[in-house]
Length: 229
Image: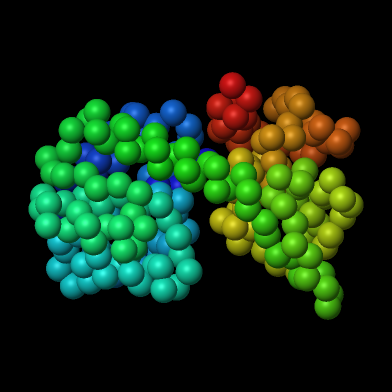
């Protein structure tokens, strides 16, 4: 699932954009609204795509975009503004789009589709660093079948074997690409590797099966069907 944020000081406008995104997105998305750049900087920064107003009180959208770039945070940014004056500034922070208010649904759809395609492409190529003892392993996300929670330890079941580390499953839910789904408190699986599932278990392409939490079944089924389509 792709994580998308809308950051705009006009709360009603932000909610309207959020609903438009949910309606137009062709992949599963989670949309969060922020009313100012400061709140986003504190509680966001893990989104894949950011629809960002430029003119806001306090920290402007432009300043937030520069801050994120300096911090190494790279959401795909689409600026929202009623002013044309900033269009060239968007290139300096590597923004993916620039939409003028009032928004036209067709233009929003085109910008959203481009951003989603780019986000998915970047996630496919992502590698993660897993520290096991004194050794740091660089693992391609696409090589992981699933992550298993064993108490304080996490075990990464990959195409190259198992790698374990200390950590929290919640943190890895955020780090791994959107095609990973936590089907049970003890398992985070790659939807790309799912071969079958029912209300009690998930079968993976390596022949292994993991548990499915009953309350996760419907959400999992929806996400899985979207990726299999």
